[in-house]
Image (cartoon, rainbow, N blue to C red):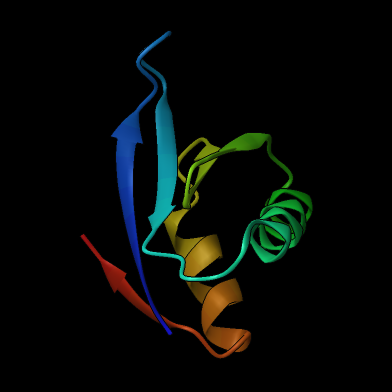
Length: 76
């Protein structure tokens, strides 16, 4: 599965966030994936529809974690 990762800004406070998009799983799998990413990166985050948003600039960590899990990652 091909996932896209980009860095953005939180609209509420302007701090950097990492956005993982184009997840084609059901909500339960997305929740589990988000929980694992948050614990492995040591950061907070939330799910926004079919996107996972992690607090902070975590692109390198998230890319390596997802590639180890067998996903193809595209940075935007």
